[in-house]
Image (cartoon, rainbow, N blue to C red; front, side, top):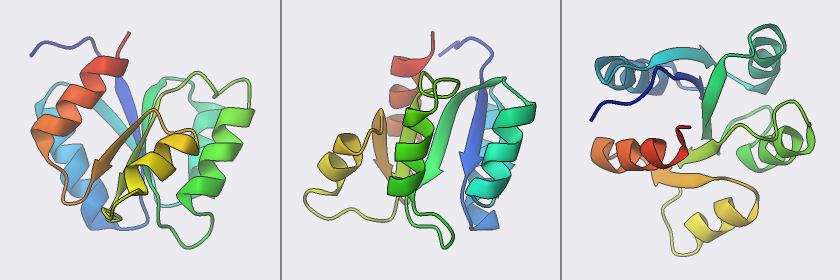
Amino acid sequence: MSLPQTTILIIDDDSRNIFALSAVLRSKGFQTISAPGMKEAYALLEEDQKAGIILLDMMMPDIDGYQALAQLKSNPTWAQIPVIAVTAQAMAGDRERCLAAGADGYVSKPVNVDQLMNILEEHIK
């Protein structure tokens, strides 16, 4: 699969998840930037407008993914960036809840790389 050069912002409070996702995505030709929480993510988005896709952990301590989705989608500068919910919540209805909250895609942890690549391919311009 040959995808255009895209920078992906990974927002996750667990550095192990950031490490694993970054390694996989880099091996697939993506550039990654990361933030351990929304405060840092907003700073990255303010200074670096290259993020083409956001992978958002839905369960973080400072601002959860649902609050973050609302904030991202209400900001005209960031609203067009596809946000993929990445979560350990894999119960019935969780996917629908994430999508209803504004996520453009959903993948559960542990991340199935093929599924993630299919979702990313859908959102790369």
